[in-house]
Amino acid sequence: MDLDMTEKEMIQEIQRLKKKKNAVILAHNYQIPEIQEIADIVGDYLKLSQEAVKTNGDIILLSGVHFMAESIKMLLPNKKVLLPVYDAGCPMAEMIDVEKLKDFKSQYPNIPVVCYVNSSAEVKAESDICCTSSNAVKIVKSLPGEKVLFIPDKNLGDYIDKKIPEKQVISWEGFCITHHRVREGEVDLVRLRHPEALILAHPECPPEVVAKADFVGSTSEIIKFAGESNNNSFIIGTEMGVLHQLRKNNPNKKFHLLSPALICFNMKKTTLRDIYLALLNEEKEIFVEEGIRRKALKSLEGMLEIS
Image (cartoon, rainbow, N blue to C red; front, side, top):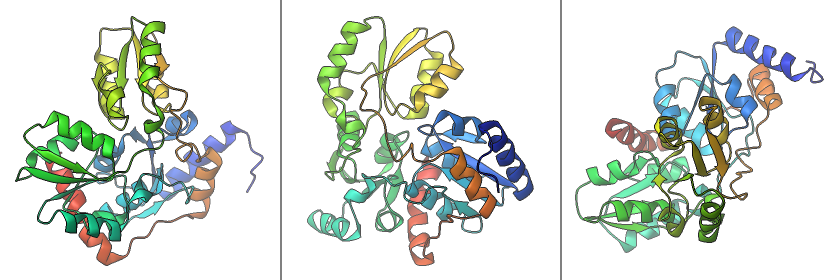
């Protein structure tokens, strides 16, 4: 094992190992550009989940964070699922656990729980259905009754509540530490600097930021909107990793980051070396206790059926 190989040599080794071991690499839109370039599938969580269940790979390597790999394992229990950096976590997911959720539910009995995928397997197992930022509004609309409990992102919950006035969305007080750092004043400042640009924001941003955006959507929706728009300049209000696909797909358009705070350090932990070692040694494997997996799978499958 030669870890002094050049980046080009390491990429060649990763490609060789993928073929030899029938491995598939999934990478989230927030991963570093080098990883997005060697991945078989790049996208937001919903796209990665939908594509993962179609794959014939024996090994699924997820370049992202822990809850994503955990969910892929729940969807594909007979596959070997690897997470190259095992401690790449999600602070939002850690803002709620099963005991906190049970207490939350006891305060609002008989109300369905919609669980954002940024959560642990145990929390998903205690919920009624999952959602992503791409399909959250559609999922909540599909549920009976006038109220839903939404966990753990209060900003996405606020966005859903405003989009569906006939429903009352009662949100847990969690948030994405990256998107939550964006301030309303930064929106005003970029408007002055780039008056010709459209502002595209993720619904994990604070409500006052979302309210001033020209378009609000998931990472994949932002990429799609920018590609199809006749506008040539955009301010991107989500994690900076999205800029790679945007600039690659639209070389004649200009993209600026809404805030320098939009960097997720957990999403940036994984390197090509980590992927190489994980494939070489088949290490950092993800496991989920079967009882929890079965319960959580109902929430995930319900989400995919509606999507």
